[in-house]
Length: 304
Image (cartoon, rainbow, N blue to C red; front, top):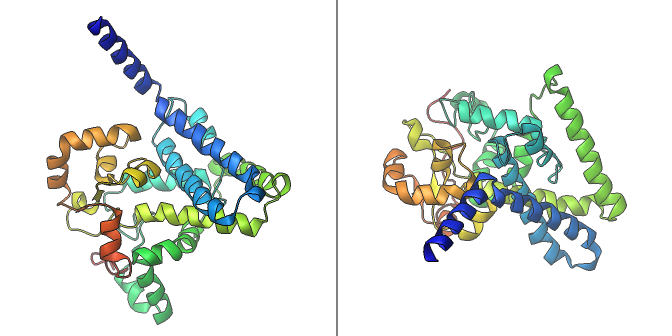
């Protein structure tokens, strides 16, 4: 009986992973939670809406990242149907997808010219920049600054130099339709003032997302040493879908989010040797070091 039960549990676990059930449950939680929260907006105090709204928007950002890497099915059209709704309003999924895949493909992570997800600038641009923008970018390299200023700077960087190519028109048309549907639901059906949605959902949701990416990468001589590990993050690990183990994600980009901790535990020593021991004990450790102190200069030391 014990062997039969064990065999049944093994088959169940195999099916669970094969069909990526955790990601489907995640989709249900995110979109079910968002619809419920927005529909109940006027019955709840703002201090309840704010953390829940921010969490759901950031959670969807993490889901979109997972979908970029080919989950939860082998059919791209189905995966991207789950990703298109812009709950954070500003970021268009087609542009994010192309930008993030370029980030993974670059041989020079953090390079201002090559890495579209870099917050660094070249030394020549830094020298020519006026003092106000220098202060702004330096503040953005503190954890608190990234939380407060980061979303606005990210929105600007995301759309700066955007060009509509014919091959992307269908994707942007789908984004526009999805954005229109989200805004209609928010403002017309739920009666939420647009400013309130931005203040309680979209902007703080992006702030939470940037808390994850704040120190994912650093300038380093060795490409492998540019990507971080943040351990002991059970709550934020769930929010970020274990992308706090970011070195693991870059080493195994196709691995589903719920498999990363198991593989990391198995390969921890090799991973930390590989990334130059770029590791933090948790996000409290990150805050203790860098809440008000810049983690480094916005001017990349290796590029003019």
